[in-house]
Length: 261
Ligand SMILES: NC(=O)c1ccc[n+]([C@@H]2O[C@H](COP(=O)([O-])OP(=O)(O)OC[C@H]3O[C@@H](n4cnc5c(N)ncnc54)[C@H](O)[C@@H]3O)[C@@H](O)[C@H]2O)c1
Image (cartoon, rainbow, N blue to C red; front, side):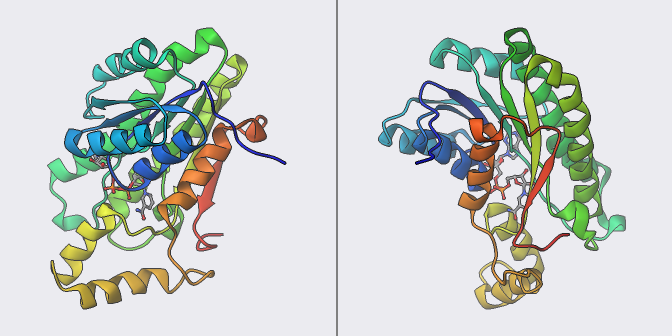
């Protein structure tokens, strides 16, 4: 029987207080890993950590704003000092925002690029400083279906997430000599807090019927005729960090029910 055993391994998951990051953190813990729950939202991060501990694994929280490059070295230190090392870095923290380009403020453009692209770059750089001398480690970066869908109003987000794909591929070629695999995932459409915020903007907070209709407009075009679940993305992240994926690097994988080809 094939199974994924992460006993004795340590993962950092950014943005793991909620949504996909939380599902990824829990999936790694279910496979036996200890986890650093890193997020800007520390109260929800503590809840994720408690859930991990209830699975019998060790978990610590670390408050981070992924825009702050300097704080990443402290994050790596927290993992190595408290959990004994770092095997997997999952750069998941991100924000979404959809609107016509003329309605974006400079600050909003900066936030989208700083968190979605530069935060991922900072996370990879810090993780590699630890992993490269050890010739060991895996990194997974979260991009998006938005890159290939080219939906109107998602231009800035899509641009930042396209950067994640290019960055991942080039960096993976650089890290390959140190036996480190780096890949990206393009999640499809998952109704996390990110989507809730977007649907509130589109249909009005509390207007659940209109929100459901607005969400269906996006999910109706998915060939498998259903949205994705956070666990779908978590499964891909776990696979990419497992021995089953030893020879997979510099790639991007869509988990989107066939929405992009
Ligand atoms: N939900 C989807 O349909 C979808 C689709 C494609 C890609 N993604 C990507 O997946 C990732 C996770 O998204 P999600 O849907 O779980 O969103 P979410 O809003 O549910 O969770 C994002 C998490 O990141 C944290 N975060 C935000 N900014 C941060 C910062 N500067 N520093 C540290 N933490 C920060 C939040 O506090 C939150 O816990 C994001 O990168 C997102 O772009 C999501």
